[in-house]
Amino acid sequence: MAPSPTTSSELSRESVSKIYRLPLMELVFQAAGVHRNNHPTNSIQCSTLLSIKTGSCAEDCSYCSQSARNDSGLDPERLMDNESVVAAAKAAKAKGSDRFCMGAAWRGIKDNDDFERVLEMVSSVKDLGLETCLTAGMLEPHQADKLRDAGLDYYNHNLDTSPEYYDQVVTTRTYEDRLETLASVRVAGIKVCCGGILGMGESEDDRIGLIHELARQTPPPESVPINALVPIPGTPLAENPPLPWDQMVRAVATARILMPKSDIRLSAGRSSMTEEGQALCFLAGANSVFMGDKLLTTPNATETEDAALFRKLGLEPIAEPTPQGVPV
Ligand code: SAM
Ligand code: DTB
Ligand code: SF4
Image (cartoon, rainbow, N blue to C red; front, side, top):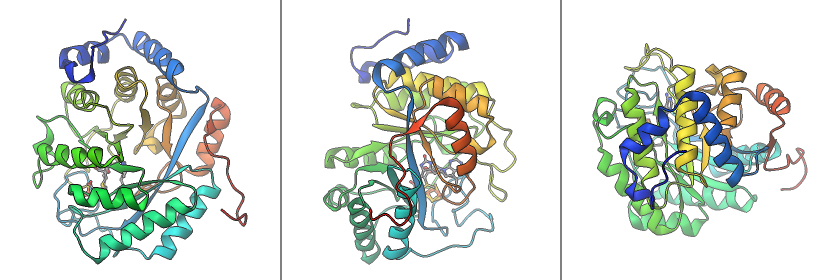
């Protein structure tokens, strides 16, 4: 059986590596057991993403369409108005999402009028009966407090990769900066959504290092998005070879074993996966997805494809879809 450390902070990287490198069938079998013991097996948590402020970002994240340093051809857009955000959130709820995630292409939050407007968006989305999530870069403790008071349930801030590989991917902020933001989110009492991206040219050891950093947080993040790189023309990672499917399954299964209570989200990159590959990830403990035809700036698996896949697998979204026109 997989070794079980006394507390997550005592987890060694070696023990994560042993789990990650189990024979695949054994790994999936163990992960499926942990999943069944901790979560309803036939239900799936569905989040919808909306880019509320797009592009012209000062950071140099080499995977991202939104960095001003990458020539991705994306049209930048200023912060959306509250009414349009609420309309998108209502539509997401009507289609069966239980959580609405707003993304802003900022290096970090500033104490300005735009932040006040984001607070209003959080409250308005919360009032629709949806869980709220925001990803807007680095933040300070007082800003996390304001977000909590506005009704924010989750803050997404990813570690992206292992500490050693991080500076190959981003140079304009450090791993330590990321951990500090996560600490502010945690102290404010907001749930932490934190994961990473696979397929950026990192080694298997780096993938193990990422999962180690996630799982040794005390407590571990409540929500763990595992993204496969969406290669974007004009970014330094545009020509990266696709992630082998078994690496995604291994990452999901290892995360499930080490973070039994967390939601493990099969995130960006699903549209390049086969139905069978996704099914194996759900069996290995993924219990959450981004739903809807678009992620932030790139296409997602379509609603039609997801509906067909969920039907085949007998997976039920947590939330009942509310037909359009019914008051929410
Ligand atoms: N600017 C904020 C930040 O970086 O924290 C929030 C938005 S950013 C787009 C949110 C996360 O999306 C990133 O941390 C990264 O993990 C993920 N992401 C961005 N571009 C991606 C891509 N091309 N493929 C996979 N994941 C990506
Ligand atoms: C996360 O881990 N994945 C989401 C969300 N958090 C914000 C973003 C995926 C972005 C994929 C590329 C794009 O659409 O721009
Ligand atoms: Fe900016 Fe976030 Fe994209 Fe990095 S990942 S360039 S911080 S929007």
